[in-house]
Image (cartoon, rainbow, N blue to C red; front, side, top):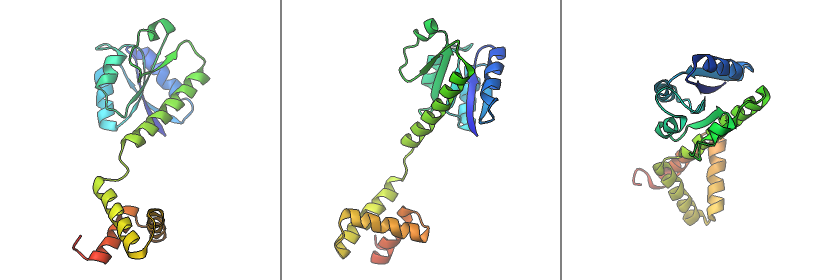
Length: 182
């Protein structure tokens, strides 16, 4: 289930949006009525999708967005004239009034964007793991005459057949070839 923060200065609006987002059963929504609550929820629960109004009691949505971690995405819902005042290019804007189906489609898209951004920002392998893979490929190229592509495919096949992650497979090849002297 996807998790979203609904942040509006009016508790009543926050509750309505929360109920709307949770109505499909696909989204779990945490309601917040202040920027401080949003920041705490993001920090404690690693929720990166925020649907909010243009301002909260302590600050504007733009000011809040700047204080959030890089993995966060924000959708500000308001009337067109209010949305035009938002200068931050990384904030998504949604014009109200709008049908429920359009709001839900936009929030689903926002969730997907957030997940994609999070994956892109998170390194898949550490520098050390990547270096082990590169050294193992170089060893295979030198000892067996593989091209780089063949060495990589060999590592991948060995990793898949043994159920061991690629970086650990590479480390194993290096340990077998060089013992503990790598």
